[in-house]
Figure 1: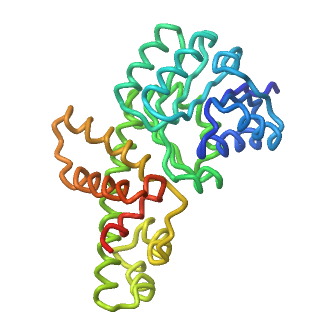
Figure 2: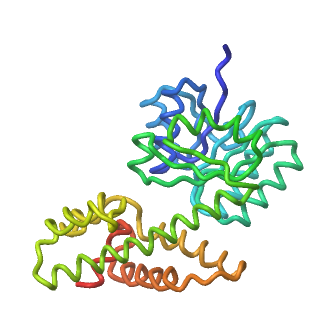
Figure 3: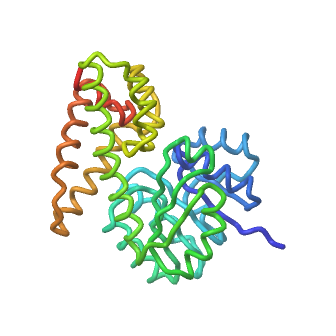
Length: 286
């Protein structure tokens, strides 16, 4: 049986392990990365093929996946890849970007006889490395069925949520939830410390009840240790919240808490915490 030929464009903290899982799952993988040296390191580790441009990577692929930086990166990389893709090929964008750019790329793909899915992920670097991501997908059922074996290689769950753009809108909801939860956890720890409580003991108790969250389970201890040099960077979170706030202005929704937490993250940036984990909201309360 012929292996599905897959190209992966963008080997950042998420794309690097995701592409590796595709090799492990038995796909015929070609990669492209803007920094060639990093792509060469990936090839040395996983033994797949290296392309020197998006168009070279996309040529003759059955599926092309992208995980790049922002809307402009999506437009630039997708434009070059699409020009080289054969009719019937599927393009999947794992970048966290706007629903606007997802719909824009979808229209271009349709004009070229290509399929397209917007499929942002959640789970962070650890989720990517462990193959435990969640994938939120917008597009057609036919394209989702084609893509699902690839998603299964690096995710614990993927779901088609509607037409193109739906995946990005769902990711916005995800980030809105995280912003509020992290701020609540930061305030709770700050309160506990001011009250003279053993916050480790308190977290051990309340994490067994209704206050439990992924953030509490995975970030409370590092927050108490004042450890933030890892994880999902504040700069990335502000990019994501900006996308959500822009979309809210378009659809008329009210995101008062999200806007407030976004400004709290701006405070962290002013403290030099641009690359700190999003749990660093606690630092501005000290």
